[in-house]
Length: 45
Image 1 (spheres, rainbow, N blue to C red):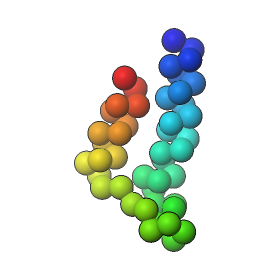
Image 2 (tube, one colour):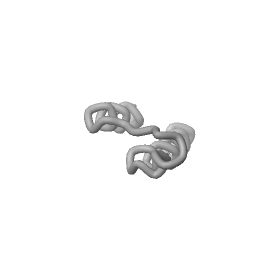
Image 3 (cartoon, helix red, strand yellow):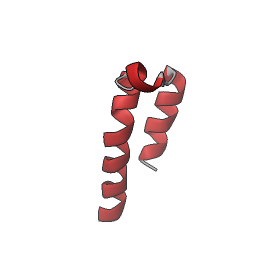
């Protein structure tokens, strides 16, 4: 359980800035709202 929480926390630390669009000026990387919702839901599984 602790390991799962660690992986979920690490995933969210990396994915939230991408979802916020912080990488867009550097990499032109954006995520659609639908994909972001799917990724957020699967991060907890």
